[in-house]
Image (cartoon, rainbow, N blue to C red):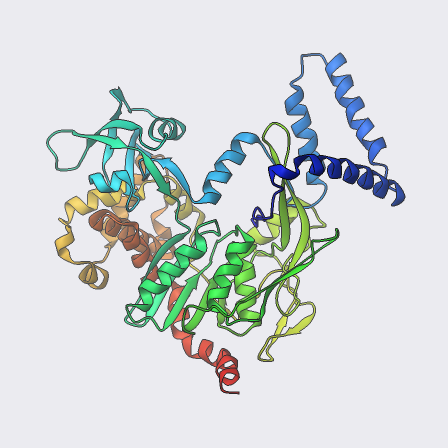
Length: 533
């Protein structure tokens, strides 16, 4: 969710002045609450009294730290669904993820048959440079067996300071003996651009997972790489992108939208919260045709980008109604390392639409409505886009064209969640004799998953205590076959990009997007007219 961590912080030179100003501000705040009819001091005394009574009289010795954290969480829950308390340990992980890197060896993995199984080595990392590949099983770490290891233990053993070493033994399909690796840990990038590739000679595809410190740089690099290959139109996938940094969302939108137009406005209650972010004249990319994909999981910063593109008629938005998360959170550090992320403002699109949907029925209903596909897409006030189209303030961003995504049964979701797809794909690679020499383009066009393959998958799932009724295959067949084909591609060509390329080729929303570029170009005609006037 959006983080405004790039606000200026006071320098050491002004610490004493800052302390004096802080004391003055504290007096001002108390005065303000009292003048406004507030009773913050009385309420604070209540909390202190309760904690004191618990400490003195509760039947067992209480953990006062847990009590204070519980009190903080309880207060924030009474505000809105996005004001939260983050404990110190969790905040450290969030900070790592937000900065776009951690230190370790560079693999994504699953625990399979009680051993670490490599899904893929992250490109450019120590594991990748040494040749660790998809399907490898790490059986020993620093001389100690890794059998029965947990995910938390993997992080503790394989992550570490840059420059330190870890020794692992790897079992590889087809290798007669274990392979020894001495890995020197390094900074490992956490990519926000999960995939970028050409769908055909002129159509690029970018899948963006979140907005963090490195996002605009990654997005710019992906665009440049595809433009060098002839890209003239882009499918920009923001489905299930839950947001992130506001400034990075603005930077990404700025690469898509010509200068001097509002991208997003922020309006709050306290002085200094109101501001509007504009696109600049430093556009670095040509105005390629643009379609953005959204879903019910598209939230916050990704709604800012899609809302700006829609309101300014830069491209077409297709998919499902977005989540409707338009509250700004500012992080306030607490003593002891914890952080509260407090909602301080609302987001508005360039036309003036409020992104945030109502939350007056409580957090449970707030999230449940979206999960069950409720009626929170009711149209409210009408607004006009730059080119004169009508859009609505409808609790999130309503797509220009609604397109259904893959629908699978609950049984299929259970089967996928049981993590049987990847190991079964490994066995199929061996059975079918697939190697990189087969050629990916040929694989994409010619290779298919048979009914017999899927029936065998069901049998494998039963060994994991997952009972998938075979008569459901008529509903789930296409998606399960695509998923299995994607897993195989990743293993054979040893890159996650191939997984996403297979998935994109069979994705009904991507297919629809490719058919709507003419409409996207018509919508963006307002920019061509402006350039001629």
